[in-house]
Image (cartoon, rainbow, N blue to C red):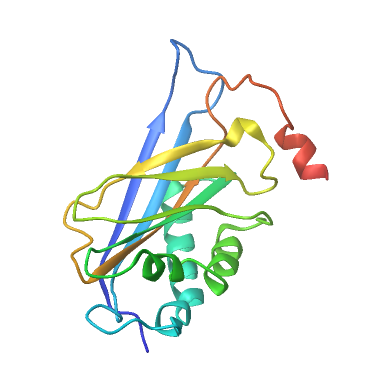
Length: 188
């Protein structure tokens, strides 16, 4: 079953300083979100969520490519989120971002090998979500622990799911809490 996408949204943010100073190039964050129909809305409980997991590769490639393009730079970190409308289940939202979806996102982002941090919830239109970000090279690179807040003002409608991929060009500005460095992760 092909995806029914009502909207494709992009978000971009650039932060040049924090704490009264910068520490190099600006931190750019970008996200791509697809507002899709929930094929399980209004149907009885289903054990098989294949209508949502099946198009995962197509959706992951689209959102990964769109987010990376909006970033306009190499992505060093990434994350994903799914917001399910109130007529569906949280599990419907989660089903859109698993398995082939993650592989396609990693491929579209490029040089990504790490688990993708994620969040999901049921909500109404215009609910903000903090998409968690972590290094695409190694989950233990603390400088890249971050989030990007995304709001789709008219979604999800009760019978929809908003699927989001977010990326960032670098770690937090002025990061100084220690841990594994990005250079160490790249050589591991």
